[in-house]
Image (cartoon, rainbow, N blue to C red; front, top):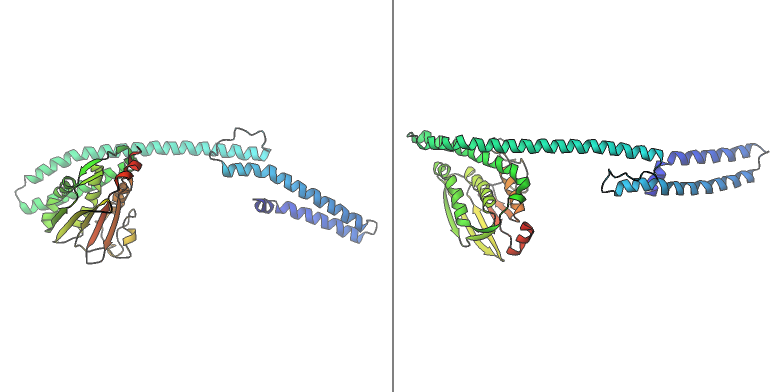
Length: 333
């Protein structure tokens, strides 16, 4: 900090040195001025100047250290010890921070309003979407019915994804940890994707060695929905393997497909927001949000998601549920 202060006051120090040099130079040129007296004066002046620098450092840097260490930059209630310039700085900072605080508060209010309006809109859209599904089910043209069902499902999944995206920042307020039946959650998601799977010739091979987990059923269903949707989307006619087991006191759920797989250079980025693929960069159907939201939801549930994949060999997503004693961190109990 002292070095920084010296750099800030470099012009003062340079001026002082120049004045001392000028005095010695005059004494050297003018025989009427004793060179010894001039040097003695320079010594005393330098000593006084050093003491002055140290005193000013203690006084001036106290204000800036308070700025650096302060938790609340708006707290300048004690201004009596401040110099006029420091008081001006403090007043300016306070003014600008108050303005920023108001702007942030207003932006937060607008964002909350927009989020509430969007959530309300999504819920409103679900009503005609449900009616549309009933109308599609009554179609007699099977080819048209399959196409309509697929497009309906796409809209349904996108709306669901948008709904949960808005809820995730406040997910902790919505958690309800309980003993959850894995089979019912998985079969519920498989049933939602049934028409799409039939259209693509995809089946499910489910073997649940462990069927009970402690988690939030609604958010677990959302995570599985994203993983299963990706597995179906990027697979052709094949079976998706779903297995559960217990390892080292933790329940593990594997979801393996035989789809196109993920390039090794993309594996570490697939959970990033908005990332789709470098190998299939022209895939306009991908939003890059599904796995990102799944990871965000999993983090709040202390669930770990790992993936093993290779191009042309499919992908295996592994969901590792937390141990029972880790739920204290989730519930705060």
